[in-house]
Structure formats: C-alpha cells, structure tokens
Length: 404
Image (tube, rainbow, N blue to C red; front, side, top):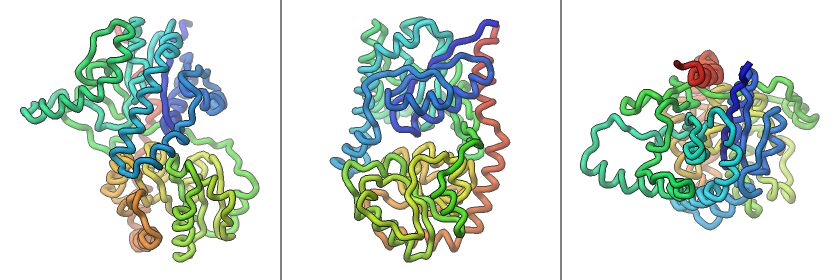
C-alpha cells in the first residue's frame, strides 16, 4: 500500500497547536503518515499524541512572549498587532526549516498562520488550508464597492507583506492578499455549522467540517483534583489560557476573581496564575491546577470563565458548559460575542478593564439565566457531537488523493 505523507506546521500557543494534533491523530488512524512542525517547546505535547514532530524555528514560549507584549500594550488592537508582528517574524525565520520538512511530502496542510504555503509551492507540492478565524476568508464572490477595493486592498496588502518576504526567498511572485496563497482546492474550517453560518460570498472550497476534538478517556486526575471534585457541588472553572500566563505576578487580577467567587458562594478551579500563586493562599473552596484535558474538566464544572480563544470557546460548546467570556484581544472578542449571541454565555467582560463587582454580577446574571443557557449549550453539544468533524475532515483530505 502506498502510504501518503502529510506535513502540517503551526506556531503559537497550545490552542494554536492542539487542533492539528487532533487532525494528525485521526489521519494516522486512517493510514496516513503525518508530521507536525512547530516550536521546539511543543515536542513533548505532539509526541505524547504519538505523532512525529519536527522542530521549526526558535525555541520560544509564545505564552511568555505574549505576556510581555500584553504588559506593554494595554490597547487590545495594538496588543494583537504587536503579537502578530512577533509571530510573523518567527514564521519568516522558520521558512528554511519548513522547506526541508516539506521535501518528499505528498500534501502540505497549511495552517491558519499560512505556514508552509510558499514552501510547498516552491517544491510543487499540493496544499490544502485550515482556517480557524473565518474573518480571514476572502469574500471573492462579493461585488466590491470602490471603498471595499480601496481600504480592503490596503489592509490585504499589509497582511500579505510578511508572506511576500518568504515568497521572495523562493523566487515566487508576490501576492496582493493571502487569498491568493490559499488553496483553491480545499479549506477546512473546524467549526460547527450549527455555531456559524456559511458566508454566501465564500468560494465553494471553504467547508465547515465540525469541531475537531478527542475524548481523552484514559486521563486520570491527580489525587488533589479528584478529591476536590468529589467533595462538593460542581465548581466554577477559571481558564484564561495564555491570558493567565504572567510576565509578572498579577495579584490584583487573581484576588478579584477569588473574592468574587467567595462573595457569590462558589467553589472554583483555577488554571494559570502560577507566579501569583507561589505566594498566594487560596481558600479551601478553591484549587489551583495545571494542564488538564478540556474533555475531562469542562463537563465537571458548572460554568466557565474563559478568554474565548479558539480552544476554550470550542470546548465550552462541545462539552455543554455555559460561559462567562473574558476576552483580551480582537479574535477572542469575536468568539465571545458569538457565544453571547448564541445564548450560551453571559455578556463578555472586557479582560483589560474588569472589576471584582463586575465578575460577581456576571455570576449572578448566570444564576438568573442558568437553566436556559445550559439547555441551549447542551442542545448545541449534542448536534456538534453528531457532526463527526474529524472524520469529515479526513474524508475530504482522502478525496484529494482519490480524485481522477
């Protein structure tokens, strides 16, 4: 049997890496040979999933670097632009590693950061895309106004600029927007069609597959977490992802959540805030934890305060838990607004300006609407699980190899 070889590359936080691990695992089960390339710091995470890992670019911790950038830029727009520029620089400097890892592959799955697109084109290897933020998909079928062409073109050229630097290395023609480097054959969107509507101005290759996730049934919590979960009612989960990775101790922020939980009478599980927790004593009604699979943790909590990154927003929907969004940057604000409009979350809290009483008020608001929001998110959860997103993605990929 001719085993097809696939490579995919991604940069960023764990939330940026995890969807590709899930996809790689499912492809491996279906007799594909898969390689993931990313920061060296993610080697253990990828190899623990029994996927071949290739180190790409410098050994940096994006959570740490993002924390530094956030500390210097409180404005969410500037913070996101600074973070994007930092990541773009890493992508550019990683190109040689990516090129070598692409050599000999049958297919390159180009991540949402467009890693691997230029290198695959230079090598003559077919690509397909993955898109996490649907706002990045070009609306090619939309009739453009003069304003759209003027301002949209300016923004598109700015976004394309770092990718054109990579294309220049391989003597490839520059592009005016990233839509020109995306696959015209297939773009996989790992989001449920029950959560977002398909934009009528997209070309047909952009396809919602359903969410990608794995039930980590073999996971066993440590004794402290197991005992805490068994000792009382379902707790609140505070999971701010990379937003809780601190450049320095953030006593005021953690204290605000702890006091709000105490004031409203809730037990709580707290992820992150490792620096602050070194010298902070939590009340007995709360426990601090490290990395725990969403599939285990989310369903065991009554509600989740989270930053609305792609991973936590998806997990809240998949495992049927009402959310209280605390977004910090623009893409998180988009997911926070989506959950609120779906009726499965409270009104988002501005992660850069929140107050203790605002946190407590959101909990009280959740109590008033808990039954309705829980019903809605559980109904969505059932539909999402029936979509079989990973299997849909694999079949679409397999179709690229079986076409005439």
